[in-house]
Image (cartoon, rainbow, N blue to C red; front, side, top):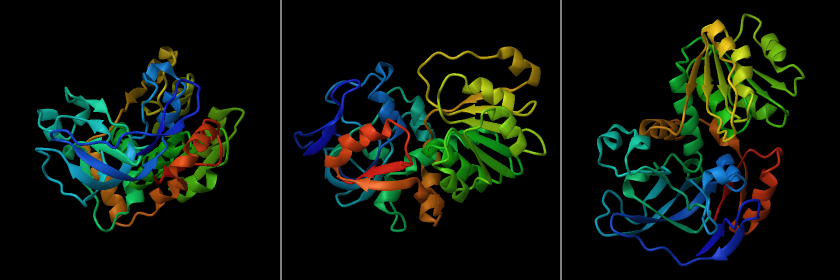
Length: 334
């Protein structure tokens, strides 16, 4: 099969031929139809903290067709169209039964979507209804990540929300916040490339490139600072900025992945009694809720997709995405 593989830190990906995978016991092979290029994939190619090894095949946001089943693989048949939950788990423990697969003792991250075929397990596959496309199946994961964060934030109908970062996760947070009844949603970013997309997905205002980001967000919330600030970037300093932007006794919800040390201004947090909440991954219930929204006709999340490319174009596009552009979510169609 053809695959785009990781060759080393700070090096371009390479498209190579790999052996076609065969399913082991309890496994299935999925013919990949669509796979999203995620910001965390870009980080893995540049940051040793993620532990990527040469020869790895990235890609955890994918959907496709089941084409082979190993011995004992149950609940699926060849021809089923599925979206793959990229959180490896045993499928049988108490955490898995509750849908909280990230706490499973067998937890791990599923990759392999930058290829024509990928191996996974039946318990990680969610069947796609006729009302959801394979492209929909490839954007469920970032939608689920954002939904999990919004739910953990405690956002209530009528609350106001500030979203820091207009990448796919930040835009998906804006979508869910409005869908869950937020009274006002504002997205703030260094550039205005995603302004129209943010407004179409639920934000009522967009702040770009402000010299004083706190003063700019204060102006965007004329009735008082927001109830919740969502940090969706992952760079040092943004938690402290969020603390200054949120109301007294408000919540700063951390979604951005940052592997560099950061400094918290705990005095400022204590003065305002700010609640700092972290969010990682999602539950199966979050994943299924994201699919339900798409299959029920929610069009806004589909606005995340800006381009679909073949495998041969992956190295060039992947390198370009390391620098901020007008692109949002790029899908691979192997």
